[in-house]
Length: 252
Image (cartoon, rainbow, N blue to C red; front, top):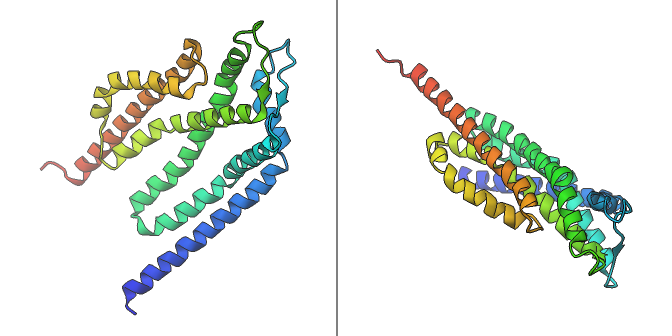
């Protein structure tokens, strides 16, 4: 057996070990989250607390297994959140040995920053967007219909909205990474700005559960601001690269 086969086996064993640790962390996180699924439901329906004269909403279940399956869904989502730092650490530890020193520095900065950006996006969705969107949805047609909200429907809407807002807040980091590895530069992003304006409102229409312009603007504005932040970061990266090139290749 040659060294290449040994190296491949070592890498596969390392990958299996990292995956096993990640799966165990996810299972433990899911079990812990299951113990608090009722509190999680209370948190998810809190943005709708202002309707019905401050009494909020009463959730219902229309299927025998609906509450149970929804509790599992909440537990798995919560478990993923709790296990994410462990999973992130395992990814970094697996990838890092094959990277150069500069690539490791980028990885160690980018991965935690991506996690913080996702949390910031989910927080924006929870504290800014949903307090506007849920009351609009639940009071639309008031006097004609009485809303009876299924627990699974509320949980699906909230998890989907918070997840996609977290993804949206990764925009400047993705732009920075693309500039760092030399795929796109700041000038290209600047030229793309007018197209991003249209894309931002299309994404806002997809992400928001409502069709009213106020909630769509609440999503589109952060997208535009995040894009401009990404352009600024890519310009800084470009200047840093030029200075580094000039210092290593001085003009005689």
